[in-house]
Amino acid sequence: MNVNFEYYKIFYYVAKYGNFTKAAHVLGSSQPNVTRAMNCLESETGCTLFIRTNRGVHLTPEGERLYVHVSAAMAQFQVAEDEMSANIGLEHGSISIGASETALNIYLLDKLKAFHMAYPGIRLKIYNHSTLQAVRAVQNGEIDFAIVTTPTTAESPLKEVPLTSFQEILIGGKTFTALGSQELSLAELSAYPLICLGRESMTWQFYHRLFLSHGLELSPDTEAATSDQILPLVKSELGLAFLPEPMARQAISRHEVVEIKLREKIPERKVCMVYDRQRPLSVAARRLMDTVIHSH
Image 1 (tube, rainbow, N blue to C red):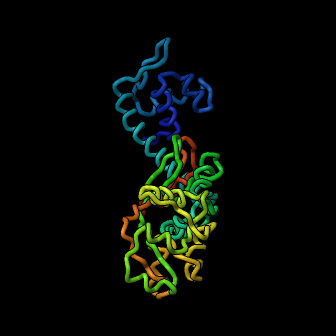
Image 2 (image 1 turned 135 degrees about the horizontal axis):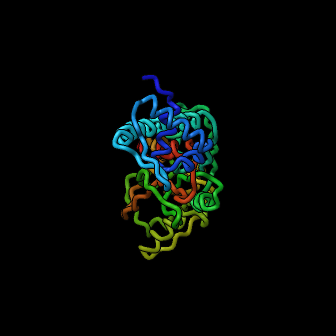
Image 3 (image 1 turned 45 degrees about the vertical axis):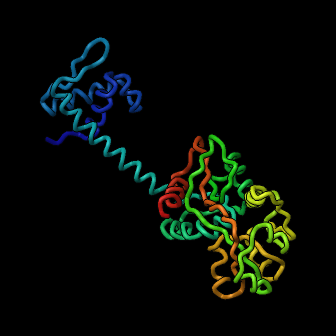
C-alpha cells in the first residue's frame, strides 16, 4: 500500500476536530478538497474510517485504530519541527544580560565562555550594572535577565534563582601586614581607614545592616564606584576592604594583599539570576539561562 502521506495529515485533523469544514480551515484548504482526500484514503486503505452525520463525523473502530498511530506520528513530527526551530534559533540572534562585576568575575564568565564556544553565532550584550540597575532593567524589559549578587530587590513577577554562594573576607595592603596575624572586631575596624562601595549599592546596604546589627555605623573613608576598583585601592594602601574571596585569592597568594581575620562572622552572600516570569524569551536566551542555571 502506497498511500499519499498528505492524506494521513488531513485524516489527523478531520479526526481531531470531527468536522471536515474545521479541518479544512486549519489546513488552509477547502471542505470539498478535504472530503475528496478522505474518500481517496478510505478507497486506498479499503476501510471505512468515518461515520458521517449532520453534526460532523465520528471515527469507526478502524478509524480509531488508525488515529492512534497517525496522532503519535504527528506528535513526533512536531517534536522534530520544534528541535529544528530551536537549532535555527541558536545559529543567529542576540542576548542581553545585566551583570554586576562581582557576579561576572566569580561566576558568569566561565558560563559565557562555554556558551559562546557552543553557539558562536549568538551575539552577547553584557551590560555593567549594579544589582539595583540590573533588576530595574529586567523590570523595564531592557535585558533578557540579570546575574547579580544578593541582597536584591526582585519582586513578583520577577523571579530570583540562587546560583552559588560566596564568602567575603577583609583584606589590606602591605602596610597592614602585621594585622594578618591578628583578629579584629568590627568595632576595632573603625580605627582603620575603610574602603567600600557607594551608598547606592546593595553591597553598602549589606554592610550597613551588618554594622548596625552590632550597634555600629558603617562610615567608609573611600567609596568605590565598582567592585573592580576595590582591589587596586587596597593595593595602593588606601585602606582595608571587604572583597569576595575568589576576587582576592590571587592577590593574597602573591602577597600583594593580606587577609585579616574578623571576629564576627560575615554572612554568606549569593550570586543569583533575576528574570521576568511573564516575559517570553528567545530560544537563545532560554538556552543561555539553562546553561547558567544547570552547569554549576
